[in-house]
Image (cartoon, rainbow, N blue to C red; front, side, top):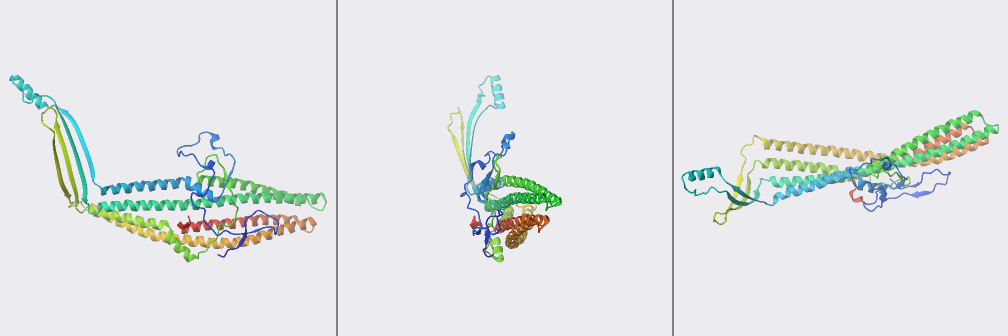
Length: 479
């Protein structure tokens, strides 16, 4: 794609008055955190808050925002992205939990008991019947008992290492999921922003069409009063004006829908309405060939890395399942103290230190069956990797082809717009001179409206294709 000079503003202007503008070479928004956004756009910090009064959801004023600001607001506020980040934090905590198995466990317990047995009371009563003093005296006994136990797994047949590696791979998968979610949100926000730009431009084009129809109606009425026009031309102009007004009403409705769609995507405050601040122009150029773009996508797409992470998770699950068939060796140490109150004997203590080993001789085939499930999951992840790779290539090829055709359409639409403006000017001059018809003027007005819409659609279709191509490639270094 070779750089070219295109007009940077699509506002209708007299023929020959459009000023050329050099297209920017940068195709990515500003880095996250470097864009300043108005504070009134931030939503309520409480996710459980919801309005209960009509005043709380009434839209007040209008705030124009740029695409970079919309992307920054989505990074801060989008709920799907926040959920993905919370899932990543949960996985990091799971890694710390798994790594705790590398350290020994230490536990202490203590209790104080006061007891009196029924047999002791019976013995005391028998002695009393004989007139003797019971050696146990039949009194309640109070005792203190405390113990501490240390356990460390010396050998787990690979179970501990597999559990830690599985948790680490899950953390990596969730981190890639955050990246995937962010890229998806960036594409959706850019698409919604371009749709809003198109809705804004459609309103402007419809307003221009209404003005042109009103001018044509005034010309037809003037000619009718001068006796050189007909009532039929006036009626035709009135019908054309009514159609233009209806198109304007529909365009305004679509504009409101597009505004609320973008506001919902970036989770704005309940009482804020927004509009697009950026002018309609090409977002940039893509200077890579199709083959280079496909290779970049294969290298950068986090979805492929997720499938590899899922494969590694299944591999660790297989090892963990087979470890149940191996020996388990652990070190066990304990220390205890015992004190019987009011027995004239000092505190006694004791300890034990040993190695405990266990081996499962037969589990009915459960461990091997679990390992077989993990092997199937490995095969599934590998198959999904191949399918994801094919889908990524198709997405790149589709976006690249759309990008090329849209750029050609922009060039064609520019030429068509200038020609439509000139044709309308000549049609009005011919009609005012009495050598043309009102039908020629109406047709020229409709052609100009169509040409303006085609140009806006071509530019925004190009921008959407560029955003889709960026999403397909996921250029991490450009974020």
